[in-house]
Image 1 (spheres, helix red, strand yellow):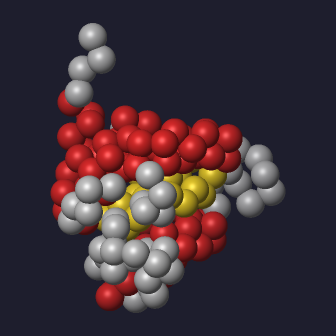
Image 2: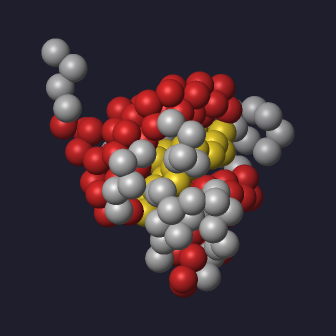
Length: 138
């Protein structure tokens, strides 16, 4: 993957069964992450229905890539399968810069975006996304 997002901030890929959810979440994350963090979505099936599209996920991984890496957050079962299949299509060097975070989609994306905007490392951004799972709301 070339450094297509043009900077050294960790990029984010948001994968959802719904293009609307992915797009709305990207808009929200962009508000807290600012313009330096690439946020790319892969939402919905190939025909515009609900679902996931492995080809679109692969494109999103390449679009969001930077020298700092990419953190991926996904919503449900088959989206995770699509992400894993897309990562398997990458070269070893490319795949080494991608982390599929085990965190909640919304809260994890917000946390990852905030931390990425500070110039944090790939491991730190992925950790922030995963740690969002334990943040209480009440």
